[in-house]
Length: 174
Image (cartoon, rainbow, N blue to C red; front, top):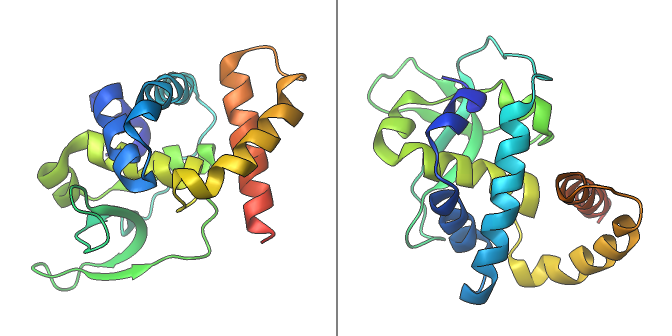
């Protein structure tokens, strides 16, 4: 299964809860986060601008970590399936998290069966919208970028994508 197919199985509320946990979004921010998740998921579902990555060992996987209490960490990895009982997980650090590339990447079947679509999509969207940072770290940058982008975009979806793209570009340069 690829990420695009997994979008059909997730719930907006469940995905938002996962992102809220990972990004340390305060309770009063969850309603706005759900709106953003809904817009992003709808846009991704409508997208046909992606390529399917044929290498099934290069996929998204959920791994337990002490960093988060209620959700595993979802990462893009290169799985060495020589050992069927214990994956050798190596984080792939040179992959840029872009929407089109993400949609065509496989999802580890064991992770899907164990954690479900909400956890996996929530973890993936966390990477491509929060860039491994929490809400407080990203808030000043998000506010600045929203002001810059806001006047040039016609729809809310276009606005959120433009904001996330600008945040990503600025964080890459830090």
